[in-house]
Image (cartoon, rainbow, N blue to C red; front, top):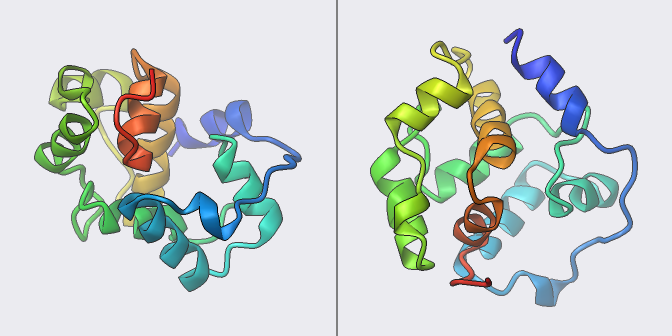
Length: 148
């Protein structure tokens, strides 16, 4: 948890201007994102932060766990399901850069938070900040093949 707070402070953003339109939810993954936004009542200003690949200072509780569960990237306890993550990376042409267990331990901390919602935010932040190829993470997350 000590790792989570400073990490959120470093990558948090006060304001963003882009708010997604209906047409922006153009992949199966982004349709899942939209369902979780509705379920967790994510407001437009928070959506703008998420869609700018940042983490809000006070994110909607369990929103990201909802998204990562919908992607099958985490189990009910919030633990990463590396085979599913690798499958998402493979689907967009980036299988070789999918995070593995060694990446998680080295970059995300050896001891993840117990709460699945906190764990999901930490994993997302870790992937966002520590991925060797950020665009590959973004492609896998959005479900948009090989954008670079």
